[in-house]
Every structure is written in C-alpha cells, then in structure tokens.
Length: 174
Image 1 (cartoon, rainbow, N blue to C red):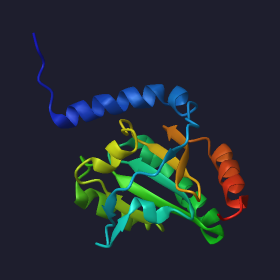
Image 2 (cartoon, one colour):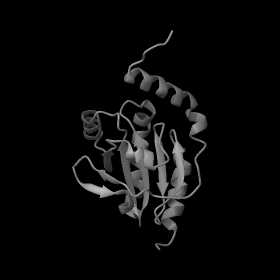
Image 3 (cartoon, rainbow, N blue to C red):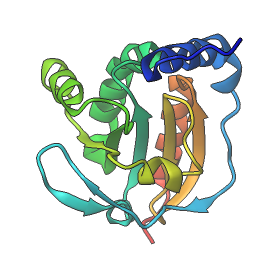
C-alpha cells in the first residue's frame, strides 16, 4: 500500500527528521573552501544583486523557512550576531527557501523587524548553488575573498560562530 502525502506533510516529516538529527548535524560544519556561486538574487525590497557582491566582506548566508521551527528559534541569535558584527564589515543575507510562501516571508520579516538583507530563492537556484542546501537552517560563512569557509547544518554553536567571525574580520583586507 502506497501512501500519498501532500507537499506540506512531506515538509513537516522532513522537518521532524532534521530536528531529531540537528544536534549531530549542527556539529558537522564543513571547512572545505569553495568559491561563492555567481548567482543573482532579489531582495524583498525588489533590489537585484549578485552573490559575488558579498566579496570583500565577511558574510553569513542563512537558508531558512518560516515553517522551520529551528529557523524561527535561531533567528533572534542571527539578529544579535548581525548587530554585533555589522559595524565591523559583516554582511548577513537570509534566504527563504523556494517552497516558503512570499507572503509568509514578508510577514515574518516585518513582524520580527529583521535588520539584514532577505531574499527568497524563488526557483531553487541559490540553494542548488551552495551544494545543494537540503535542510533548514543551513548557514554559510564567507570570507572577504568570497570563499565559503564554514557550513552549519542546523542551529550553529553561536559562541564558535562568533569566534570564527572575529577571526575572519581580523584578517587583512586583500
């Protein structure tokens, strides 16, 4: 007997799997350096950019969804991290997954007054360009040379993340 599950039900089941695995996944950040993908994105305000525009700055790129309880839980920490490092040259880009309804993303951003850039990955190309991103939250740390230096799947250890950002911000600008 084959069960037919709605897209929403499959997302909830997948989310449950991620939450159950998150203590292990969050600890398995990757240190392999890869270049930032050359992909366009559009922020909620309609402005268009390229991911490579982040080159020259230390950046966090966080893939998330409004339906992801871990994403919602970690968002205040992302805001605090952004506030702590933005004046030293760090950029934060939150990318909502393609299955996230734009109205939900806009409502979330407005109600939480997110102080950083937010885009929606309308066609999945941004998530695919990063490896692909299969679970939310997934956060990438980018150095000033435009290299991905760390990937966190699940909620990051924010103390360790802050240490890494401090280290990257202390590196000379090339």
